Length: 172
Image (cartoon, rainbow, N blue to C red; front, top):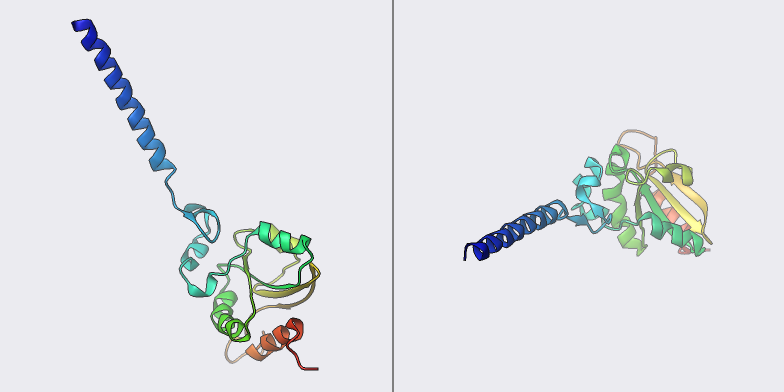
């Protein structure tokens, strides 16, 4: 009778150890993956984490999507920004309503999360609004809105003219 109890106790101990390891595994792998960036929140730049719930930064495009659009020789606009860029933080909340007004789809690419794309697309300053024709970048507005009281940068009318010119909405 004692032999059976020892075997039962061994199975109980083994079961407890398996359950504990399973519990630890689940806890370690249960970090929330962010839907916009398709990676765990802890792996994102702190400045990016601050923007996750900002309605102005919800049309995020990932490298694979951007590369596919280029490879497929599509015509498209893309907004290249850095989540820690003060000029981007000033420009984006004013640019997104204009995009909505014009009915333009403007994917946003966060260079802070994918820094190799600074060189890939020769981006010197953020934000950069780029237009691709047949998968080739043909035009850009590099830099954001001019801060109030300065002449460095662009106006909303400059952005509007850029969108109109390359979306075909400009009257001939």
